[in-house]
Length: 189
Image (cartoon, rainbow, N blue to C red; front, side):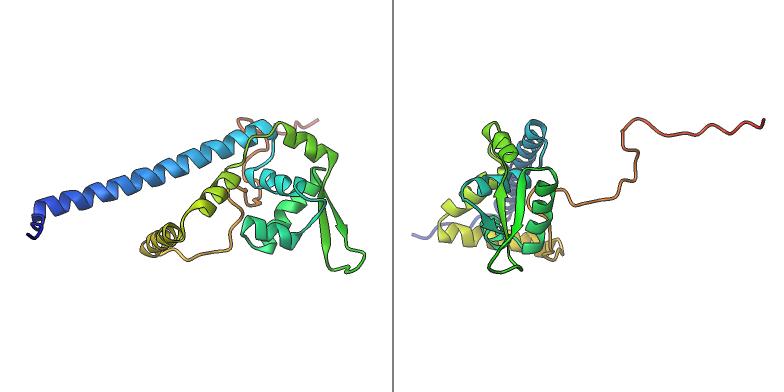
């Protein structure tokens, strides 16, 4: 016995339901990751990406920028930007290799270790662990689905920052929101 073909009305309903479920799942993923990233920033004062790299640095005596890029599955230039921010904040230290001056070793500082003691798990860590746990079949399906979505949106893969790392921008608003700087006209003597 063969399975009856769904009617056009049933096929449309199934198609609509599938798309609605897909959008709901994307919304859930974006919302949960965004909330988690904001919680990281509120509780630590640093971004999710910075916290992720600090955790990586805490797991080894020192790491190169290449090592960190491999762990974050991103580009060297992206890691360099985030590391520079950590170094400026005194959470990490960068030292040139004595054997090869082109290579730098990055270490976590005592200040960075103190911050990590009370920090939550960054969403990047959770997401990377979840992706690693996917079967090869599911990882291919996810990759293909996201690629199809990007293609349909006419989006090209670009060089981006790490997940939930803010790109450097120039301030176009006053440094303190809600306050504007006004100058009173100069009085003539």
